[in-house]
Amino acid sequence: MIPTRKQCEKIWQEYNIPAPIIEHMELVSRVCVFLGERLENKGEKINTEALKAAALLHDLDKIMIGRNEHNHGFLAAQILEKKGMVDLSGMIKKHALANIASTVNKPESIEEKVLFYADKIASDKIFSLEDRSFSWIENHPEAKKLILEKLPLLAALEQEILTKTDLKFEDIKNKFNK
Ligand SMILES: [Fe+2]
Picture 1 (tube, rainbow, N blue to C red):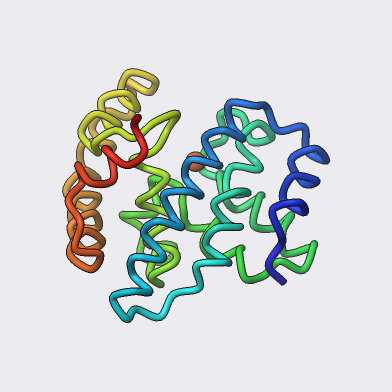
Picture 2: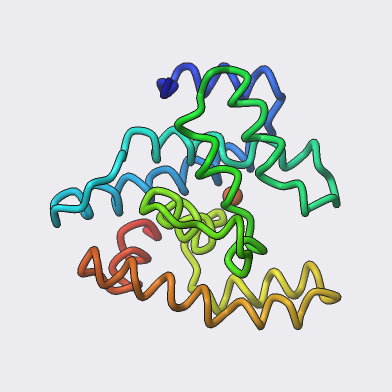
């Protein structure tokens, strides 16, 4: 089952999601819909409705997991599966940064790839992957090497999405940073 916007809002209330996280999920969702519709128009088979809802809920467990970031996404996916929202759980389970280098949880479907990418370029506004990487390193200096190792994998995913949508990164940035 794919939740409506109203149902997503109820889940935010149920889990006391702070406003900045909601605002981030809303921006990620808008980017996902923009990319999803663009892909549909290019003939790609993509479930934009599920993508939109998954984006609105993808950071549901951010507060609960605290510094246990290796659990990020898995807990949220579990909560949503229990609510019968299995269409969203794969995308959410795989959206954390570390999964780009994973053999088992790498984003593979087009919806998984778009949510993963949109989440990496959007915080409170749109930033390049390089700029986002610098701010992750600022917050987690101990993970600098791991983050820098992932940058080429992120860049390859970005290239795949930009090619399929026939967009430049600046097109996305200019659309959402006003
Ligand atoms: Fe996120």
